[in-house]
Amino acid sequence: MVELMTVRQVSQCLGISTATTRRWIKNGKLPALRLNQMTIRIPGEAVERFVLDHSRFSHKDG
Image: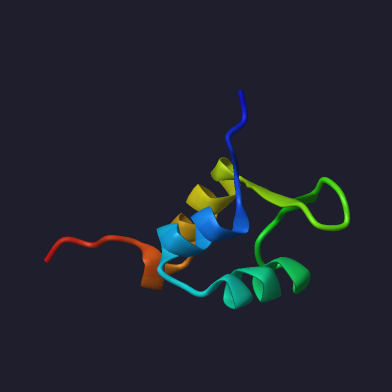
């Protein structure tokens, strides 16, 4: 089953503002599903892929 996250959950996970998350969705940087005019959900896999692709958000030892 696909985990869907809210804009707030993604923002907290990445340590960014909800405005930044919404801007990234609008610009296509972060894929999302619009369920209706007011509801956006982001697949958890998309967030994981984003973290892996952007070194600022990855956890590196050392």
